Image (cartoon, rainbow, N blue to C red; front, top):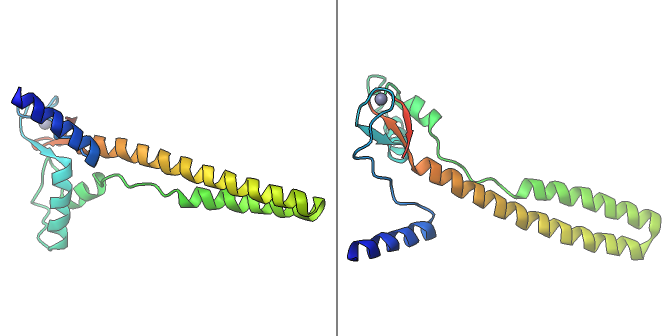
Length: 158
Ligand SMILES: [Zn+2]
């Protein structure tokens, strides 16, 4: 019962902090070579980066047949998209449209068009932010659950 409670709490805390608890790989076997030694990508990646930054990386130092440089290139963590670029794009388009309406149809319609443009821009921005953070959350969860066979380099989702 106490175990169940702490598992539940870990789940809640994990969800709240955006990190799921690591999957249990103790009994997992590599589907390719049958080895039982796995490296967690979310640990492998920063380790490889530190070795490169400290100048301690060497091509002889391989995990699953990959050099540090290959690991860093291959397993970069997902980045959060920016909602600003699409929003600016929409804003520019709508500002041009509002200006056109103001020029051709006068003050009143121009003002309505400007207000409508601002409202649409805000909606686009909020929708983008929401969609990017959902995508980022899923990509991050996948990345956190990714392992690599230390023997042959086969990737395994935990
Ligand atoms: Zn393997």
